[in-house]
Length: 256
Image (cartoon, rainbow, N blue to C red; front, side):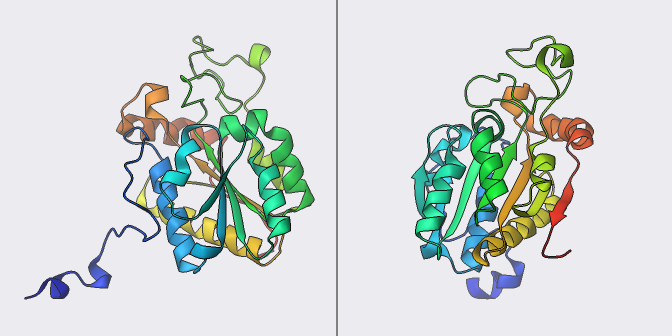
C-alpha cells in the first residue's frame, strides 16, 4: 500500500492552505486568530483570488498578519484600516479587499472609519475579531468588555455608570443602508468553524459582486488576557459572551 492510497483527499482532515507560509505564529496558545487566518486563506484559495486579494492589517494582536498569508497586504495606522481599504478598492475595483481588525482597533479608535465606510457601502469586507479586551497591550478594558468583566483597567469589573455599556458594533452596522451582509460568528467548535467559513465566503463574494459593505464579526477568546486556560476560556465565552453577542446573521440583503 502506497502513501497515496492512504492519504486520499476525502480522508484529509486538516490541510494547510497553500498561501499560508511556514512562519511560526506569534499568537498565544488557544487564540482564535490562527483559526480565522486559516479560514480566510481557504476562502481566498477556493475563490481563486490569491493574486487578486489585498488585506489591510491592523494595530493589535493581528498586526503581523502579513507574515502568515502570502497575499498583498497594506498596514494601516491604528483604527484606519477601513479608510485605507476604501482607497485600495476604489483605485483597484477588481481586487478582493478586506480588513482584519480587533475590537480595540475597530470599535474604539477606529469607530468613525468603520461606521462611515460601512455606511457608504464601500465594496469591502471587514473581519472583526471581538474578544472583549485589549489583548496585545496588557489586557485593558475595551469598548466590547462585558458588564462586570474584570480587566487590567477595571479590576473591579466594568461598571455601566462609570464606563458605559459594551458596544455592539455589529448591530449598529446592520442598521446602516450601505451594508449588504452583517453577521456574527465564532470558531469555538467544528460546527461554528464551518459557519464562520461560509460567512467569510459570502462576504467576499458580495464585495466582488459590488453589493455593498460586509461585516463579519468573530466572537473570540483571549485566554491570556482573561487569565484562563484555552478550555476554560471557550467555556466562559459560550456562557457569557454569546448571551450579549448572539451568533447568527443580522442582515443579508442578498438572501432577503
